[in-house]
Structures are given as C-alpha cells and as structure tokens.
Length: 151
Image (cartoon, rainbow, N blue to C red; front, side, top):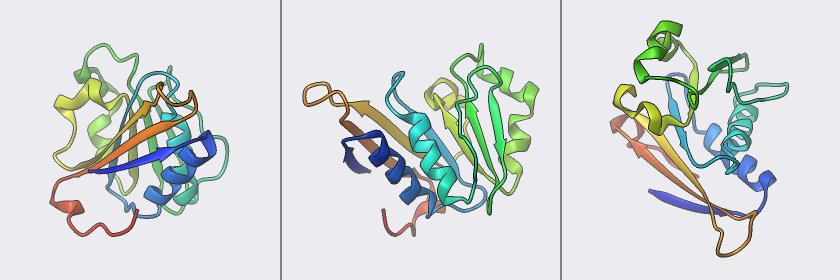
C-alpha cells in the first residue's frame, strides 16, 4: 500500500491524474471515503489522464456516467444502490468486460461483487491537521498490478 497526503482539491486531482497515467483498459479503480473527501476530484484527475474532456460529475442519481477519451471511462457512484446485486440490472458486468477504465465511488458498498483484481483507493480527511488535508491510501489488488511502476 502507498500512502499520500494532499493539501488541496487540486493536489487530490493531480494524484488521480498520476494514477490515471498508469491505467490500462480493463482496470477497475475502487474509491472509498466519506462524503466530501474528494472522490470525484480524484476521478477528475483520472479522467484527464485518460484524455477525457468535459465536466466530470458524480453520477449519484444515474449510477453511471460514460466518458470517451483515449481510453473510455465508466464512472459509477453506488451510494444510493439498494443491494449490490441491483447493479446487474444496469449491466455492471458488461461494463467491466469492455475496453475501458471503470471507476467506482463508494466501492465498499459492493465489495462482494467486485472483480478479483482492482485498485483500492481510500481517501480520508485529516481532521487533526487541517480541513483541506487528505490522506490517500492506494492499494493494488491482484497479480495484474504486480509490475506497476511509478506513483
């Protein structure tokens, strides 16, 4: 696991961009953190690295936003999902099988249906230091990521 500290939304986005530069089609990025910790800002950085242009928003009420770039990106927000299995009704498995990067906010809510290999990103506020400081832990799960260099 790698741990990072960011002191602004721009730095959180920049760290997402650094991770995004390492991603390939088929990668799944799982984001975990309380409301307002910067999951969408981190996703914006990933999108920039993948060549996605336009405004990135959290798909809280639609569950998934699809973005085109050099590598397509599917951005899920499962905060309002009833049961993890409900995602199958919107084609979750099909999204995972496409040549795209999948980013999932609130991934801890669907941990039972995640693929066996993914990147786990936990974002926490450092309330003892400053409201804007974030501690971001990134863990690469599965042999797919054995040779990841950088970050």
